[in-house]
Amino acid sequence: MTVLGIDTTGAFGSLALLRGGEVLELAVVHAPEGFAHEIFGEIEALLARQRVALSGIDLFAAASGPGSFTGVRVGLAAAKGLAAALGKPAAGVSNLAALASLGTGPLRAALLDARRGEVYGAVYSAAGELIVPEMAGTLQAFLERVPPGAIFTLPETGPFDAFLPAGRVYTGKALAAAVAKLARPADPALLDANYVRRADAELKWVDR
Image 1 (cartoon, rainbow, N blue to C red):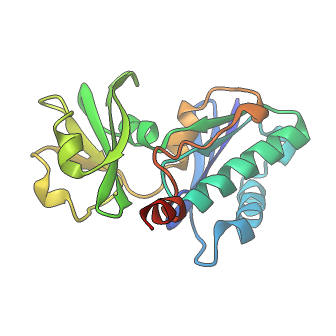
Image 2: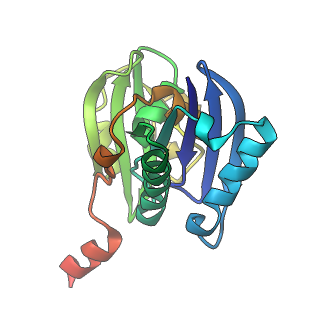
């Protein structure tokens, strides 16, 4: 199976092309003006470098969040649109699940900066089983739910590192390969965003 993984949920996105579970190429994508203007050109360039036709993709996989609300929508729309146009399956994969798959140890506490003084977090087993459900809240609230011995898995260093227990893995910003590896074929119409919390605009409206 040839899988195209798409992650546009952060400031830096990524694309990955996998065949038979092996990564053919992982490309970091930086789009300061927004991924909507760049993503299809980047996909075309990646496939050209690997000499793979778009019709040769068996599964389109996108990071479904949590992350940038606009970025989440762009990636899901790209995967859904390409899959529907070609009559192929598509899949959405949680960013936290993708992070955890890159971690180490039997318990992996995946952690993302959610801004507004909050984090996104969840705990998974090495087999990918969800142990502590995904949440958005303060770092302290998440730490209170993390089982002893869990290894923290983060994309990069951040403002809350000093408050974490010892034992952590930094995976890097490119999640597309992990997304592609975790993807399971589904109907493109079923793809949905995994926001975990409400959009900042909605939160600001409620605060008024």
